[in-house]
Amino acid sequence: MEFKDVMIFLSFLFSIGSFAYSLKTNTKKYELKHIKRKEILDWYEKTIVILVELKHLADYNKLEEDIKIKKMSELYKQIECGRFLFPNIDKNDEYGKDKPVAYQGYRALVLDLLVFYYTMIKDDAYLDHKEHIEILIRYFTSSIFEILDPKQHLNETTKITNKTFSHQLTYEDFLSIKPEIIYQYI
Image 1 (spheres, rainbow, N blue to C red):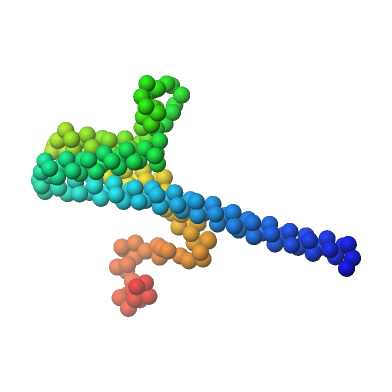
Image 2 (image 1 turned 90 degrees about the horizontal axis):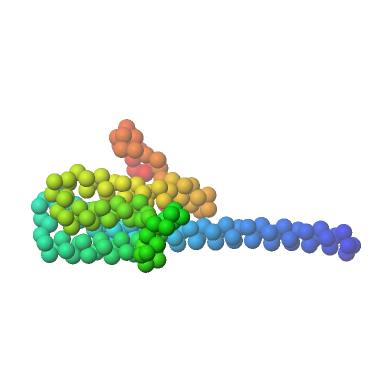
């Protein structure tokens, strides 16, 4: 084998190795993003269950004091756990520097919404402002939606898995489909 042939072979091996490495690191990057995403989604799920339960209990005037205290305690725990996912924001203005480190700076919006919700329940303000509870829930969900960007995540997942996880059908689209065609979506 000539030197030139050895170099071509080594270049070929290097190219394959580089390609494998890039695939591996992109996959690893995706895995790490997926783990963080799941962590936030798990926290979100626990939190939204509490918010919705409180809302429905309030809507039907079933928010008795013992249930209220239990649910408020659960919400408070979620707010505290959320501090690790959404740490306070330091605007370099010394705000909150006298507080313990986890509470220095400005609370992230996603947690501020929960604190406002908590305060409304605690102070019985929800009794006169039930529509605000719904708005807070929607803003909370939208904040998490913006952070996780499910559309981008679906695109990345589709690229990596070669599978589509959404048919992009709306309710109106569904109603316009002939009933016999619907079976292909089930």
